[in-house]
Length: 424
Image 1 (cartoon, rainbow, N blue to C red):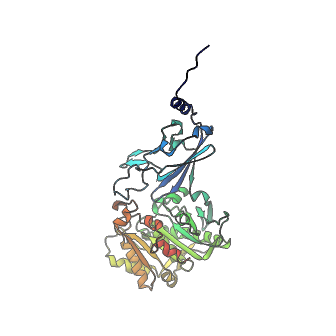
Image 2: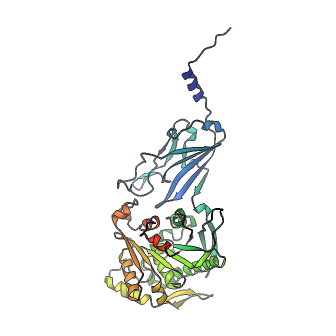
Image 3: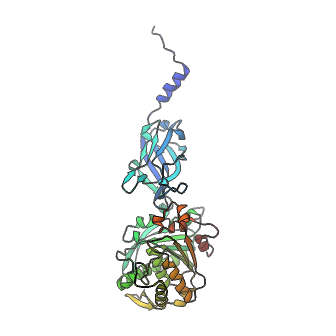
């Protein structure tokens, strides 16, 4: 009779552990969110064909590599972002799906300078078949945006794509007659696809993430010729006003359908969008309750890159422009129409700018405010962010133009976004 070999208990346990089948991955879902300066990864779902392969897995069996803060600098150190010391990995399991949440990190991984990039990777030191890289992902999901309505709208001879967020109640039904914030995109998103416009910053997700029941709207705008001193070219200004006319017509359909409250319309935008916000209010000052022009450019009078004028001349030029014409759609064409200057200056505006902004210098906000003040405005305000303020959001002085980041992130008692919400 053949003898049976007896193994110690500890060796039996080791043999059993090694016998755990390797995972047969069926799909990988990546859950992301729109960050301040790019997309962030929040969690990963790994679904396998053999659920037993997930038995006994712990957070310490996983490690994230090249997972860095999603900004340009680390707010805590002021240096280039480095891998998180603590990945914040938490595991949970639902049948054949392993849910891995972590401290949110930039979807593009870690970079050194402008050319060297190191992709992120989720490493499982117990089963390499559970390793995840971006190219292995089956499907990406985007918080808030996946629940938005997308479509196209035609008006005034233009067709533009849009993305609309409508808040929902506890049962998942859209809440009727909510306030609306329409965001005017910046020049970096002009003539680009809708998703680029929707993910360039947190304009569509900011209010929803805070749980504020307010609709948010973004249009993909094609203005390939909008640049500094665009106001010198009537055809460029006419196109800006035509885009705004289209947006206003679409907003009217939302009001007619009971989706948004026509008495609670708000507009905000940054950079070129800050300038377009001002033109939007010049066209329809009686339709909006308040506006937030952020680091605005100059589609009204030339301000940036103008050398032959002294600073005070900008104000005088703006005062004149605010009493003249904008383009409006008459059913057949865009035609010059008088500005309702009284309604325009009564509309409260909160200007936002960074003191070190070299792309759209703070002179523009100062000039807009002073010109409106001369015409009778009494409720305008200005928030100026210092280099220190921006550093807290991972923004170095070289990109101080990004003042929309603290704008859309801050909901404190004295914040600009709180100012808007208080008017709901």
